[in-house]
Length: 174
Image (cartoon, rainbow, N blue to C red):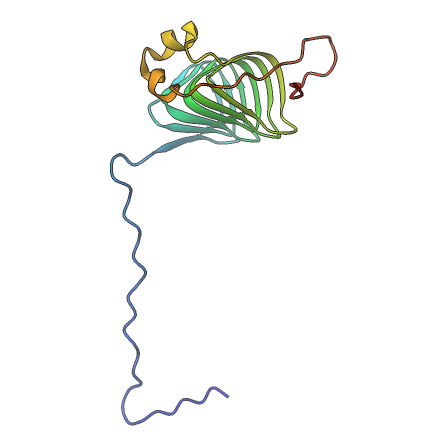
């Protein structure tokens, strides 16, 4: 079935070059720090690289020039300052973000969100207040003028249901 005829000497093998690796993008390479699911941090975290949290953090998280991701197993009890943020786990505190916050379908967030852009996926739960004014004084103070460039596009307001002691989810009907 797979008979190969060998004609005198060694079989010819075509020259095949290994696949080329894509060149890294110009500029800085993004580094990601990870707090694993079995890790608990008590105290403030300050960094200048993207941060992925799957463990527990009690304290302030400050990655103002970077993205913070709280994975499905992650829990943060404290304020978070970031350029962009994605939450799939639990957070209790203030989220002060220069660009965009995304609450995934498994997110459970209690507190205040201050950012020019907010995405809440179906199933995500948020209890608290939202301020999406790109000129917010807290954003200006937290990020100096760094947020001005990323917040140059106007943001839409998202109505939040009044706290009537009932359902804690955002009411997306307007």
